[in-house]
Amino acid sequence: METYNGELLHTAAYRRPDAYTGQRVVVGGGGNSAIQIAVELAQGAEVSLATRSPLET
Image 1 (tube, rainbow, N blue to C red):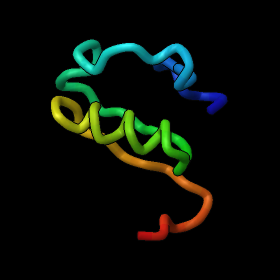
Image 2 (tube, rainbow, N blue to C red):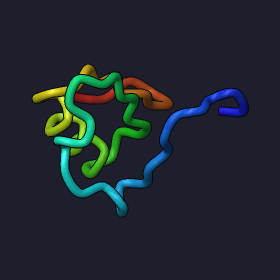
Image 3 (spheres, helix red, strand yellow):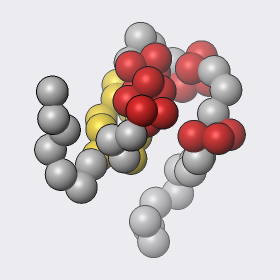
């Protein structure tokens, strides 16, 4: 993160996916909010999900 120059945003500040359309986005975490936001963002952005351990289905 020391060399990352992009935007960092906590889920509490997230409002709408349209600001990220056409962008590459990394969502950190595997909690409910992270997954819900990742799914919403994936409608218009390229989304990667980063978690500490594999998600259980």
